[in-house]
Image (tube, rainbow over all chains, first blue to last red; front, side, top):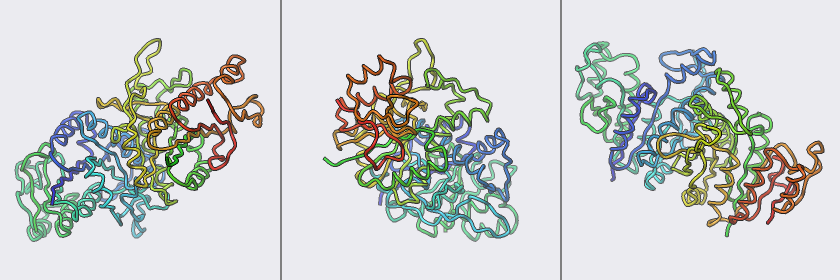
Length: 256
Length: 256
């Protein structure tokens, strides 16, 4: 099977001129089939502030009322996505910006209210790998914003790591998929104060052990859970690494 | 050749809940191949106000500095476009939101500075009719925001009527194209104070005559110039009508 690389980049990288520029260069240099999934949370928080809308977060997840949904739809699908698309087109990459609503690529269900009402937040139900595959084989490079829809007329705010994992899984029947989570650290760290303490390889056993010892905590836990789930579902390789290492071989490799 | 209908709707219709709802119903009911091109100027003006950015207009065209470009990119490609796309998906229409940057569908040149510096405003240079045709024949319904790009990394604010006209022309090799400009009036009026004084048919001669007599003025002049240009370039029919008449046969028909 042919290879495909799915790059997920966090907000911080795509929201600052300098790091975005470097990312677009590095991403353009990837040979073969590829997809970019981006965040945009910091810009959404800033825009909310400017509009006098309070940003409420629970465990790193944004409580998305109607006013906040409008902000994230504007910022993720508009500002951040189109800047990336225009930037890639300038480098000859045939980028196409997508949310889950476009061509019904990702359908979600609004998250049920249990202890917390997250509002217009989507849990992914179905990714249309077939249509993505067809676009990709036509030479198109999907650039995906962290938004889905409920197929009842509403957009839904959706975690970008989740989108990356679910899209990677949906493409396994068509490609040998490598999923790369790129951010501003060199990988999963043994010591969060030591940038060079990268764990080179992580298995479910090592992960469980590190979580128990509280070496791995916070937002890294769902990221790694996503990664293991992707591997279980047939994704060939998951790498967690620095954004500058898109074409390198450093970082943390997640294996069974 | 197979038929295609391109509907252009003004901002006022897509920006209000009630008229948007009706539009989505009417648009969904169109049989066969179709495209929607939308505006969003009122929402952009409102959002600019909320962000403390002054909206400067010259002859109905928005002066687009960098801050304004960010606003229109957010509002047109984000908020307005994705609400339409999600709304159409809910009705079973396989909508795909596009700006000119996506798949390089519309490349523009930044408008040269003569008397006025319009800023980040694009004059359309090339529409990729082939890729649009290929999407449409796959059952996809493009929903186009009034934004293009310069292929040098910048988005450009672009008049929605112009986009509608240029896309219609680019599709004439593939389809029998009907171009409908839909707005909140019943058509081109003989007397702007009489909503029922619709001119049923207009030719270049009648147009020139009415412009001389100042019966036709303001924003209707470039709209009709666009229409005649489209007809000259092979578009089968151009209709200017009320948004509720998408599936009807009322309004003003533009003929050679």
